[in-house]
Image 1 (tube, rainbow, N blue to C red):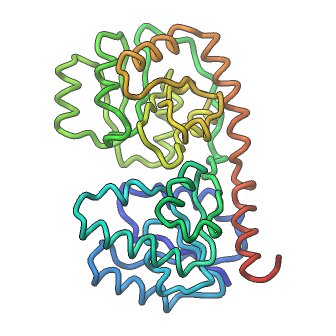
Image 2 (cartoon, one colour; image 1 turned 135 degrees about the vertical axis):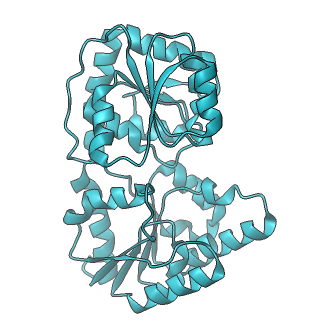
Length: 326
């Protein structure tokens, strides 16, 4: 029996759940277990560990976020880690030690295998838990095979740029400055802050903001845009690249290592710290139809590497290795 463990379900936060929903029916026979408690307090952690202990089976898979439940699950466990820096950029030394101990050190000592979603994340993780290098395996995130290619239309007088994410690493503030003065509509996916709204209005940009949308509406935003903006300064993987590739939209992305790993040559890379480079990239993409078609063609080829059946097979190989069937 295989048990796949998920964090407590939170409204609007479902990136990990979405990844595993895509491959769920392709995985070996299993049951999905959602933890009952949210938070990082010792009481919540203890209750979740006990709950996990009571629901453990022959093979256990922690899908991310709640790494610490490995304490209750034991050795026959696979732990998926999606990124490292978001947990370790904490400045308070006591809290940082608490996170390192319960989210990284102890789980890494206990589990049999650790999967990461990119080679970039593998390198980061090896620096954090060098004693567990031999346990780490790279299994990329899949793209959703339900995404249908949608032929793009000729760009009109007011092209639409879809920007993904509002956190600091998503670089929205620089994109706003880059778009200032361009005749376009900027659609932002992710809840914007008061300051971000203020910056939009001060820059006199025509914009729309959406968040907490069902996935069908997210795909509609992709289909309705002309260019996708994703000049991130940091990512653990970069799933929006695959979504844009699959829908058939050219995407501007930050020139960082992990996005090269995910995108290959199927995106337009820019220096994410340079506002002028972002502006020039958007202008080039909007004005050059041949470039857009080339990137769209390359994107449709790129997503094939991340097909759900390929990713699911890699997890199944790990399950079988622990079950002793391989």
